[in-house]
Image 1 (cartoon, rainbow, N blue to C red):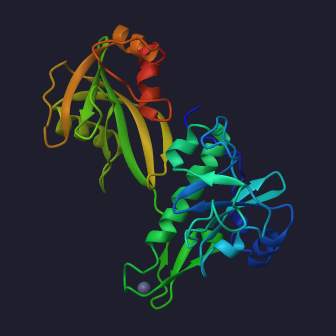
Image 2 (image 1 turned 90 degrees about the vertical axis):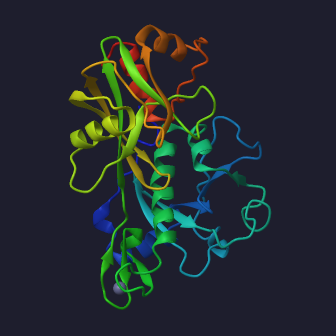
Image 3 (image 1 turned 120 degrees about the horizontal axis):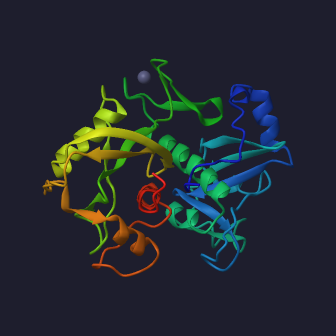
Length: 307
Ligand SMILES: [Zn+2]
């Protein structure tokens, strides 16, 4: 399983436009509210970053005093009969230290949180964070500049002037492991820590298929020509709203030339070396991405021969 995927919730999208149902659930004592503060999820407990971490799900009303007027409260879905909502409490000054949440838990960045909570809870974080982030950045209409307001329990915004509708965005990114014989292509981004390599990746462009984007990115970043592109898996990546589309690609040769506008370095990694690094051994000072990243799963799947 890939982190941020595999949500346990039934999104019950048919309920979003049912205002009475949503209102009733918002005040139903069995419902749960998941506060996020400045895009950081709330986790229970006093021991910061204790593993396993637990989502800070609260009974309705507790966090309300912390939310500003019009703060997004988003219906995430149903867990059995229990409705889950995400509430943006960014208006609060320091909610872990003062107010109704003081002493109950703490806030931490979503990437760190996802690595200490269960896979199911990480998927809930992904949904909540991507949606709240979108609302925070879409308070005004891109057509006419007038304020927009939240609709459909958080899945639509409507312009108050021109009535245009705006929907939460998902930005597709291709991330691909090019292979040639028993080696795969890895690259080091300019901002990466020393020795850290990953699969190559890039945003898809309008008017492009996944296969075309994979071929273009490999050519642009590494001058590597690929003939065959194969889908592997996708991963929601809520930083802020990407969908990572993992692929394998067969390269025609092991020639590669880094585009130094994009990357610091590219190199071919032998399968045996990749396997050793994933098993925790030190080889050539190379580090590969941790399991939170789909790149880790692409490389591991190929290295252990499952691809
Ligand atoms: Zn407008």
